[in-house]
Image (cartoon, rainbow, N blue to C red):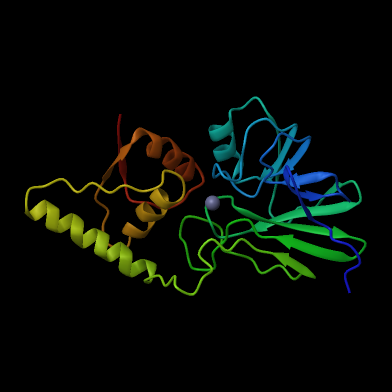
Length: 222
Ligand SMILES: [Zn+2]
């Protein structure tokens, strides 16, 4: 039976009083634990940033290198006040993490964005046993039903080939961090032909390549 909430909602975001830190805060705070580098989770202006090792290059690219970054390997515990904190794969984008908090034997996990489907571009979601799980649920309503990713990737590839047959360029718009790389990774099932990238996508794709994520060849177009 839980005695007291380990994590509370405050004006600055989710706060853990036992460890005196915030998770993905939206106002400036002393100590922030960041689940991943999407802009609704990672903001500039905090004192210290804890985040996953594999997500750090993306975080630095997005927020600038002037902040106090403290990378943690997945599963590596760090002591913050009375809390032991560790990060675990969330399966959302490269380096995305769930935050595990343990205080006096009680364990809470804050998911951040996560998915349990296969994704060749990031570490697979890890089930972290806990007493209390705080979950994001962006597409949690049952009205959301997704096609299998391989099917969507095949449709994209076939559309690309249809455009080519008509002598047209196939231009696909997608979010620069995460989605773009996932499409490039999934296309590898069907082709090794190069894809031209907008500069904003290219720089992030390069970070994924540094992390040895397999994707189709790409050519930047600035
Ligand atoms: Zn996200």
